[in-house]
Figure 1 (cartoon, rainbow, N blue to C red):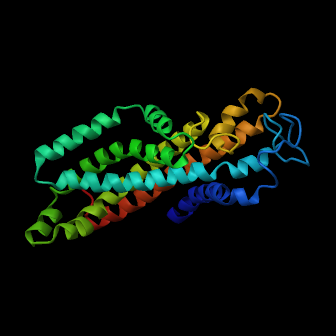
Figure 2: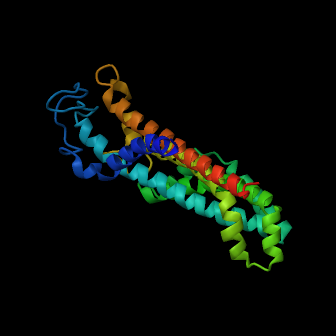
Figure 3: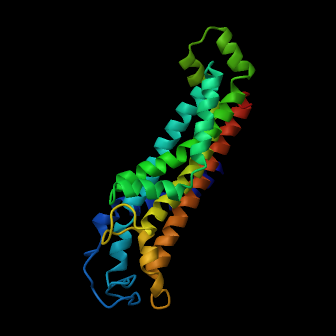
Length: 273
C-alpha cells in the first residue's frame, strides 16, 4: 500500500517535471511569433488558444517551465546540502560561542523578506536566471540550517551516538552511521517544504519579470501577462498556475510520504529519538 501511495504522488510530479524539461523541444511552433488575435479561445488550430499578444499558449506552456523547475530543484538541493553541512557542523562543534554566533547570523538573514533578496540580487545582474537561482538558494539556507541544527542537537545526546563516541569512532563515521539515518526523515520533509517555497519564489521571480525577460516564456510571467484576458481565454493563466500547484503540492506530499516511511523504519530499529 505504501508503494502505491508513493506512486500516486510521484506520477503527477514526474509528469510536470517531464513537461518542463523536454517541453521546449515539443513546442508545436514559435513561442514568440503571433499566430492569431489576442486571447482567442482554444480550438483545432491552437489547442489552448492564444495569449495577450496572439502567441500560441500551448507552445509557451511547453517552453515556460524548464528554467523555473531547474531553479527550484537546484535551490532545494543546494540549500539542503548547505543546511546539512552547517546545521550538523554547528551542532557538533565544541566552540559553542562560535556556533551561537553563527546561529544568530543565520536567524538575522532569515528575517530578510525573500522577495527583497530576489529584487536585490536581480538588480545587480538583470536578466540572469542563474542569479535568481542563487538568490532562491540563499533564502532557503537559513531555515534548513535551523531545522537540521535542532535535530542534530537532539541526536548527539542519544545513547547510540554516545556509545559510538566511546568506542572511538571517527567524526565522519558518527555522522554517516549514527546521525544521518536519524536526520534523513526530517531532511526529506524539510526538503519538501523548501521545494514548495523554491517553486513559489521561482514563479514569483517570473511574475515580477526577474531573470530572463520577455519574450522568453515563463510560467510565472504568463500568469501576470495574461491576467487581463481571463474572461476571453483563461487558459493562459489557468494552465501554468495548475502546473505550478501540482508540482509544488505533489513534491511536498511525496517527500513527506518518504519521510514517514523512513521514520517508521528507524522506529523499528530503535534509531529514531
